Length: 245
Image (cartoon, rainbow, N blue to C red; front, side, top):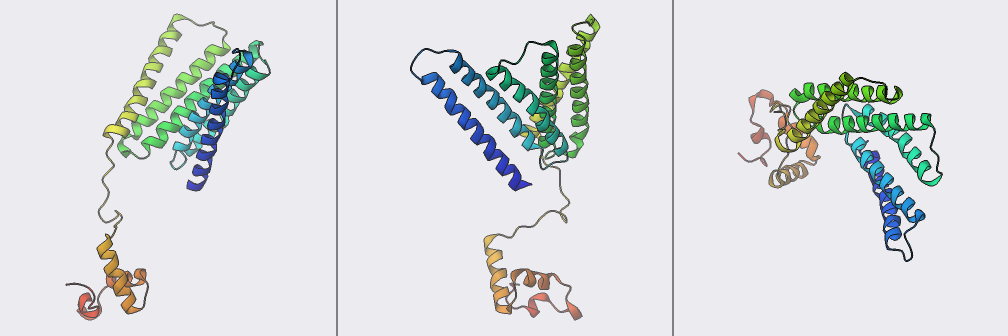
């Protein structure tokens, strides 16, 4: 999974680098700034936003929220392709087109947000899971309400807009809190000292390898011997003089 993330990250960076190069060329090329140059800049903007979204999707790749990231990546393809079609093919105008575009953008943003929060929060304290789940529920409810508004052709009352505003505020509050706690205040959960990994420093590692070479075994096998229960009550250090007392 880690190698796949690295490959995708480099592909994202490469794609936006190419788009950025074309955008800079459109701005610095001689001659008047016309519709072709404007299309290039709009394409650069779309590719840049898609690249940023892809990096958010990759955040959740090594967490329990990876299905959300995969779904977000799939959904994001729809508005990206529709945006490029509108830029270069002038495909738009029908009401159904704009409905699909608005709904796909809404869910792409929502799922991208959740994949980012899931990837960040999976590395923070587990006791914040309730906040992540609550924020995800609010975000999904907000996206569902926006979808209903798009499909209703503007036929909604004042109460719906109030609910929409409340959900948007709660969604923003939960997202900012999770990110702030992860970046600035989210201390890692304390590990059981028995379960925590142990790393030998350079000096101890060298002593272990030297002792293993004297015994003609690997460092791992030597460590297993040293950690094995002493038979007959003898001291490990008596059986292996290379170990300091």
